[in-house]
Amino acid sequence: MPDWSSAAQSFVLAFSALFSIVNPIGAALVFSQVTADRTHDERVLLARRIGVYAAAMMLGALWLGAYVLEFFGVTLAALRIAGGLVVATRAWSLLMAPETIEARKQEQAGDAPLQADAAFFPLTMPFTTGPGTISVAIALGANRPPGGIGTILPFFAGVSAAALAVAATVWLAYSSADRLTGLLGEARARVVSRLAAFLMLCVGTQIALGGVIDVLRPLLAGR
View: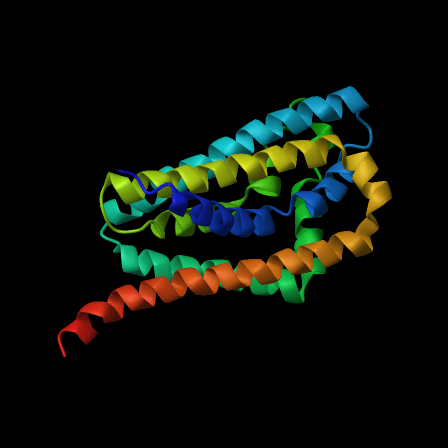
């Protein structure tokens, strides 16, 4: 029987990591700027499409990314260590230099007003769910617990629900970008981003630690 109590833990772990890297609140402020020449209805439509595309990107990376890498001979322990380091490094960048990340996202989304349908490129990929988000999702998928369907199913249910929740947050934040801009402003949005980045740093460390434990377990058991 599946242990559904573990699904909540998987949800919290995945949501904190994905929310931190996507940063819907901070991204909404940029979204408001780069789509300023569009009507409110057009921005709402764009936000809905971006939310759907972002969900598809994150779910695909969560479900298939680790299996694809394993197909090429990368072990699960190596995936966890490398993925955890990627998450932690990205979190450190967000924590110490959020202005640099914001400037890069602004540049990535800069061509959006020039395109008739910019929902997927550049507003979803790479602006909302770029390589960093995909790397984090793959790392989370690689962190799946050992065992059969009773442990795998609750894990993927939890992380999938987290991806959908983050995508829904993107949809709501982008749809309400104008109100968020007036309510938060850049300073408060940066505070929220830094808090989320610290949580993400802890998540990355935990994922990498799990990989190290996987490597050391047979060595310690043989002593």
